[in-house]
Amino acid sequence: MKTYDIEIRRVKSMHQGHGLVYMRLDAAVQPQPRHRDDDGTLEPSTVLKLTEENARVLFLLLKQQLADFDKKKPKSRF
Image (cartoon, rainbow, N blue to C red; front, side, top):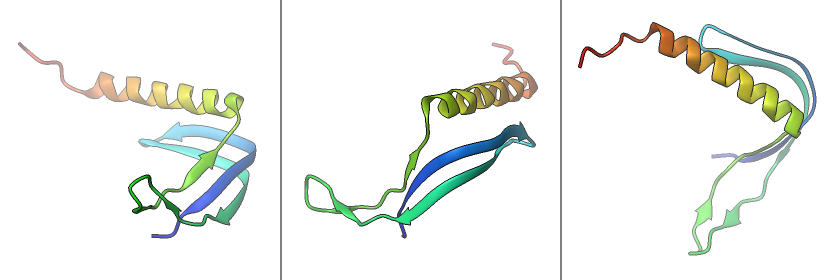
């Protein structure tokens, strides 16, 4: 698995629909060297870096999307 270091430079737009969050953005994507975990095993992971402001917008969109999903879910009768 290839791992990357992704730094979001600028978010042009962000919206949600059809169960997905869409982001148009400028980002720097660079291959990330593999790091060894404490026990010596290679731990593949991709890192996404974004500002607090962009993280808050993403969080609000996800929260809205989950609320819409919960409305569609049938209520339990118990």
